[in-house]
Image (tube, rainbow, N blue to C red):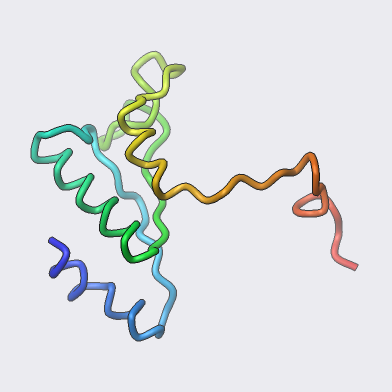
Length: 105
């Protein structure tokens, strides 16, 4: 798949012609079945190439499943662990409230 992803869209990132963020990726599995293998391969590819992504979705009743279990409260730990490699560092709003709360001067 990596050759296909290179051919389809990563070349723009290498050429620095446009920023790249992969949107709405996700799946019901991160296990050893076909869906899980594909999803893990994509996550690894994105991590290796420092490419941003939006994981879809939070709610469990979407076609891709969600990071939440069917009870809407429990985090699917296997998915969380897989997605964690792409998470940005948290913004500490308590220490630096200027980030989103202050008006530009």
